[in-house]
Length: 430
Image 1 (cartoon, helix red, strand yellow):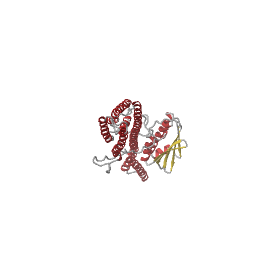
Image 2 (tube, one colour):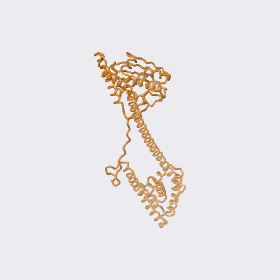
Image 3 (cartoon, one colour):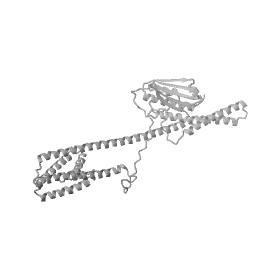
Image 4 (cartoon, helix red, strand yellow):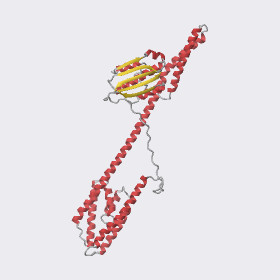
């Protein structure tokens, strides 16, 4: 009979307002997430524009110091011009098209004709590695190695400096493979982060949906209990009004009654009217415009129990070991004093016994009823069963608490000393 924890209301997080398209990066209302890509693009372009010229100076400076001097200046000059132009374009555009495979391929290819574009080409190769495609990686290695070998041969023709292809080709291949592996690691990490974020969002949506469903179930259970109480009170109210009408009619048509009989009939009318007034207040409190639902204690297609003894008998038929103890009062006293309370008490007892059977099958259940401080107290206790499957929805205790509240009472449950205990208090004066 372990209750489900009440679901707390959950509100979906509000989305930040989008910045105006014309607003500058530093303008109020532009989020950090919107400024970050632009800041990153500018930073990468600036770094490549600084490192690229230094690499160009080192590369071509070594050729100018070669001995003998450049033998073919007519070939060397166009190579320098192409190197500078391609490098300027690559460094300027490296920050753009982060997700473009074509752009990354062009940056990687620029390494084959321009030392100035070397830093931008490194960025392009890493971007290609983040895609984690083996055919693409093989193609990039072949492209860069072939282009690098062709550029080295062209420089050998222009300057006379040996290309050292047996050393250059494996070194260039190793560098490209290392950059691709770096990119693959970054891509795997980014994919993992994206997957975890999606899982977190999905879990949050599912939790919110479960919370909304739980709230709806609780609201429906409470509404059903209010309707059930209103229907339960109907018979009692009809009986009391019939008593009032009967005795009032007798007083109206009998002029020969002795004074004592008149006073007795008047007391009966007064008591019946007071009882009907109390029942009517309960009905007006409980009645709501809801469709009739399953009533408390109504399980397995049977009618709800009308007495505590009937509820205990049904539980025993299901194989439960139930002991009912009346302490200081009897069932007949409750029935005579307040039939409506007796019916509600029987249905609450039936629901608690059903819950005990679901959550602690085979365990003995102790049902104690007593009169304490103008309250009719019902205590249902059963030992906890650790291996018991959770077969209930957790709404049984919600219905019990709602019925007790509408009758002006309370319902509490707790776990102590390995036993689960529910205490229901209903107003009752003998």
